[in-house]
Structure formats: C-alpha cells, structure tokens
Image (tube, rainbow, N blue to C red; front, top):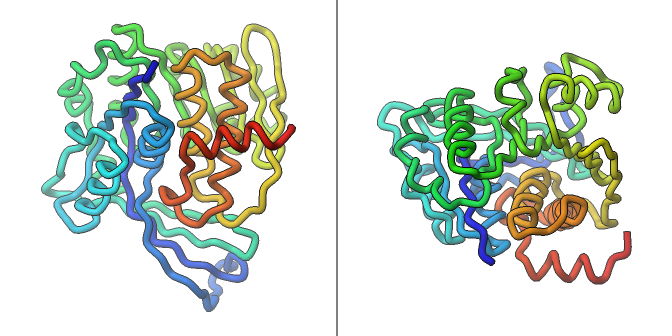
Length: 304
C-alpha cells in the first residue's frame, strides 16, 4: 500500500556556515564552508516522506523570489505535490541561518517570512486532499491557526494526526487532545510541559492535558514511545555524525510513513531512528534525507 500523507508546514532556504565552535555573545569567529540547502521543517518532512515512497501533498507558502523558485523545484523533483503551496506577493521566502560546529551540532535562527502567512483559508482550499488520506504530518513553523484548521479537517475525514512540535510553543489542550501522536524532543517536551525538566513528569503532565501517544526523541539515546499505559525505549543506531540538521525531520517522516503503512508503533519508531541516524551522516537538510533502500539496509545490518 502506498500511503498518502499531507504536510502542513514551512519551506526555508538554509544558509549554513561551519565554525570550529558556536560563538559566545558578542564574539566573532572565522568560519569555513558556506552552503545553501533547501530546507524548512515542513518541506524536509514532505521530501523525506516522498523519498520513502509515500504520496505527499504539501500546504504552505513561499515568496515570489528566487529562493521560492528553488524550494518549489526541489520539492517537486522528489515528487511532492506543491499545488497548495501559495506564492505570497508581500512576504519573502523564509530563511534559516545555521551554524555547525566541529562535532556537527547546530544552532539555528529562522526568519520565517511567508511561512507566517499560511492561513486557515490556505488549509480549507486544500480540503479535497484530506479525503482518503492516511496521515497529516505537521511541524510548528507556521501559524497555529493553520495547524488547528488542518487538525479539524483531518479528524473530520478520519485521518491520523502526527504533530512534531518544533519549534516548541505552548499548545492549547484542545489541540493536544486531537493529536494521535505527539513527537517532541526533550527541550520541546519541557516547553510543552510548562518547564518541567524531568522526563517522566513532563510526559505525565502532557497526558493529563489530553495527549494520548507521545514519542520523545532522545538524540543518540534513541527514542521513547509512550502509549496505552506502556513506555518503550527504542535504542538508536551507531553512526558517525557530520551534520544534525534535519535529523528530527527525517525521524518524523519515517515514523509517519511506517505508521501509515500499518507497521506497529515500536517498529515505526525504529524506522524513525534509522532515518534520523542516516540523516546525520551527511551535510545539509534535504540532501541528507535517506531513501527507503538505505533505511532497509541499516535495519538489516545493524543490531540495536
């Protein structure tokens, strides 16, 4: 079965510089390589899902500019349907300013531009694609109103909803209760849980507010799946780290595709871990996103 996945989210051009370490406030460092890559959490997740064999439709916005042209062409090249990615006449395409240190760890500042103009109307114009879809996958790099509108449409059509709350922001209980799977990393979990830093306590707090199934990504420690009163730790894969940009997006997309194909949740988390691991072995956001055969090989050869 080829699943159909809808992605509501951002498209950014990533401007990436490498430096020996991250600068301190007020400090200037001399970096080395500078590169530009198609990115944005929404576009990354859409491209990642398409490379894993899903039919993908994206809802979002870019500006009427060169970056917008490049981002649309990149998504289309991977088979993403961009019919409902609007060209905004008043806002520039979003950009992300990314610094990578010698260990491949990143800091990111996003100028969202047209992404912050994605509206409830943009979502409702795409209502027809929700009919028969298997999953709705969303990060949080666009207005909350669009996210909630998409969630309502998905629930109305029986579409599974997966929310990757990145970048983290407080979310209403009304939304949390409608999400089938919430996919935060540890800092995002802490933000959602009103600053609670202890992992189990933070998860419990979100469950009390209506969150049903939670998958917490733990970087090199793998991921934790919490559902049906059970907590399952799924270990990571051992790989060399080059660039951690888009690892979370790779995880979210692979988890979503695996779940939509009917795999059980622990196996879907393992798919997510494999995709995230492969993504950190290569530079760039979308260039790092793995294909299906790569995930299959890693799942076969590496015991976890």
